[in-house]
Amino acid sequence: MKRQVETLVVREVQQTVYQQEITSLLAGRPVPKTSSILRLDPYLDQEGMLRVGGRLSKSTLSDKEKHPLLLPGKHHVSKLLVTHIHNSIKHQGRLITEGAIRSAGFWVTGAKPIVSTLLHICVVCRKLRGRFEYQKMSDLPVDHVKEAKPFSFVGVDVFGPWQIVSRRTRGGQANSKRWAVLFTCLTIRSVNIEVIEKMTSSAFTNALRRFIAIRGKVTQYRSDRGTNFVGATDKLGSDAINVEDAEIKKYRFDSDAVWVFNPPHSSHMGGVWERMIGISRRILDSMLLKTPNLTHDVLVTLMAEVSAIVNARPIVPVSDDAECPDILSPSALLNMKLQTSQPISECGSLKNIYKDQWRRVQFLAEQFWVRWRRDYLQSLQSRPKWLNEEVPLKVDDIVLLKDGQAPRNSWPMARVSQIFPSSDNRIRKVEISFFREGKQIFLTRSVVELVVLVRA
Image 1: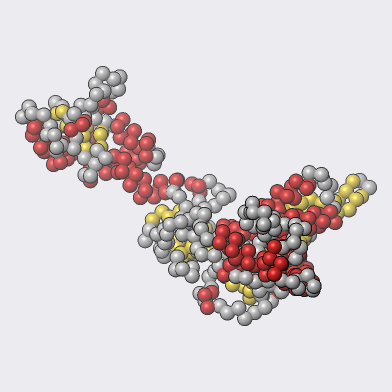
Image 2: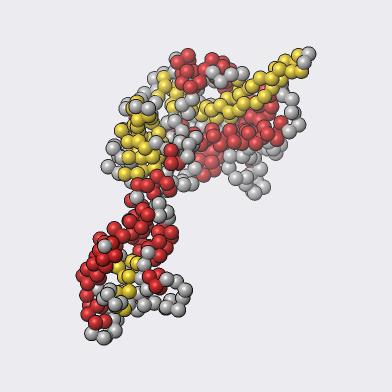
């Protein structure tokens, strides 16, 4: 019965699409030269159906693989057949699906785009192999490109821990853990590292006060949404800005310190300070090779040296010009000390530059900002990735939420319940909702953590 139904459907499709070719073959004439299947050398079998003649008649393949039935790719029946075979092989990729179609005894013309389209719209395939969403990279925020005093705009993060020797006992030694808080100036990319004993809001607040006492007042903080950061904003009396706040664009910087939290699981939005953490870790690892038994005092000293090394790095490519020997680094502005002993070339016209120390300091600062605008700021012009504008997520889109602690088949499906347009009206953050253990959960996530399954 199944074979009869298959024969009836295929014959009907062929007679509808390939009527001219069938008529020519029945009359004993060759297929017209204008036919789209001329290269396949079609012929009619005993049941009057078109099959591929081809060049594999002497191969060891089965008859249905050597001479498969012809089906037009644009016909609805062909799409149903491809879908059926794709489901039967458990949603494998394009090449395996095309191979399964040939093994089943069918030759679908233009099968490649049909299979690719099917894989693109298949919800199961999107769950298994779908790419994560992204949106065109946004412009740099004002605190990255605005001339300001060092550490006026700061990115904050915590990294560690390290085992240290807290005290020595008769039986050996007692160990404890230490973490480090990294403060990154978003304007000149300088860093300041403070050591903390616990991952608590209280310990972080103490480190923050030490930082302010040394570096001065901070206008704005940026960080991820760690619990120690959220708790610190309450103790410090800072105004915390969440991405869910509808009036974020109209927010006035009326308070002494504003704290901006990035969406959860969005480390790419804090790439400035995440990069500094990676550099600091590499430097610290090389230092720890010679100091295996750390104490609190040694760790604090190492962190100070790490800060000095990071701040001495050039933030623009080093010039080969002999008349420009100075290296543009964060420490040049922080310390007002150049790494070279040669005099500044521009000083010749300024006769009084060396008479007063404060004038020399002011001159160095001005030269730093001139080169910062000319060399460093211009290097941030291009976008390293996410170059194209993508179709934005909308409310009621069904998405797959990434969970790094679980296999992909176990990631939860969710619905987009709210969108948060950026300043350029592109969607990079959304609120999603899903059910877990009978309870509805709402989360805010970046689009790079989501895979679109079905668009509304």
